[in-house]
Length: 197
Image (cartoon, rainbow, N blue to C red; front, side):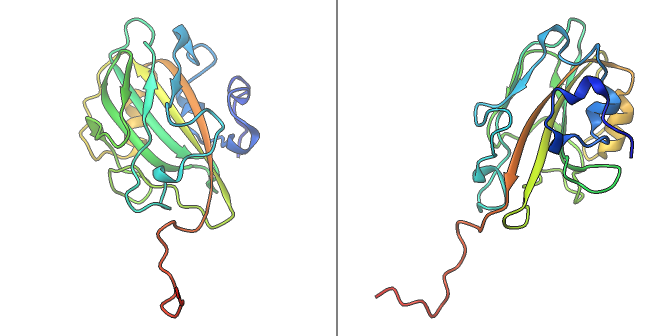
């Protein structure tokens, strides 16, 4: 497998440097952080573990909130792709692919349904809840892209279709990283024989 481009290695820790990440092929040194474009979350700092409320640990888990500042001038649309950088193989597993967001400063609230979503790694169009084995740490990379044309692809498209549609039209990009270590579900059933008295 090829290595991650040099311009991206300073943005991501070694554990999250999967060479198949969307940003590795869609972005470059000129578009990374162009115009000050940045992606962040009010729920976690970059490099900080995801809260279980955004993972399969909790029954009512939802997608985390995300915010971004204004993309470079001329941007028409915002695309967000979240991938699991711990994935084996050439292509990391897609946790979420979102588009249809205006090419301006914006945000997605916790659990908000985006305008358009595509298929994640299990084939549905929802936030794929991180679910590592207990004690194993997986690494998730949230990637934002601004494009100089609006996407015409329909909801339910694959991440590969979305990537193909924006290839060569990216005006700016940025990445946010968060790990998550598998833990036992908070709502795990007690043993029926357990004596509470």
